[in-house]
Image (cartoon, rainbow, N blue to C red):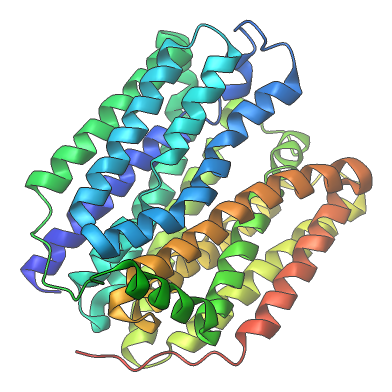
Length: 396
């Protein structure tokens, strides 16, 4: 990577990290802390308030992606971060659960993932783009693991309002990074009117390769969220207290990033990105089968077995988190890159919603073994659909 590419990758990975830490840090404590507010005694309302973020994200990813094509990446990202900060401030002030839900909805309306990813694609060459995307993916994975460690501590010190105040500050820091650390936007052809915008979106929706990747991100994040309907309970059954689950997640995430860096990038350089991509999908499926086997046995699962499966899962997950958006940016026409990544991120958000809703129902109706069986089947369908994929030629 050139110095400019390293600067861009580092700056935009930091923007993602600040925003995702602001998102993830409330998740481990949201349900418990929200129960203290008026109206928080209804679990259904608490779940609705928590899930509103993903719903508004799903609706606004494509408009924000298109806006970044039409008006530029930096202005769109700054606008989205301001909206996210406003939602965080509302949630920090919220006197009851209704206002907390409004704050979560406004947070989600700052849907900048497509614009940030498109900006990163604009300022990196094809030959190093997967590495740049991996830096973003690694920042997200580490923020997720870090949030599991520090969220309970922060909740005890400053409560949920203090945590949301912190997310507001992190969003404003992200704006500073975009304005003064990230490099200038390159000259990229932008649509001159809405007819060209609609034409670019039509190209995206008809592209077979992009459709496969959109299916993939939907299945990946549906499976990821559905898993967490059962994995924490299995860790408890294995003898690990809830407060100590980070002792499994953090080492698994960190070790998987090392493996991904040592395997994915060399395979991409050798023109074997398709093989790495398909192997990563297969690993996700193998983990689901392993979890199904442990849940089906009825005995308390072994902690080392669960830790090993989490390690393998994060190898596949982090590889796909790096390679899929990179492939989207390479396959999409330059004038519709933001729109393509907007569609991609919309399917990601929908996957989160479906994984939570359907995963919860499966866990209740069919137990953990039924949940993991459906996840394994979904991953198999994804693998079959992805098999014809051909990695685009690399432009140096």
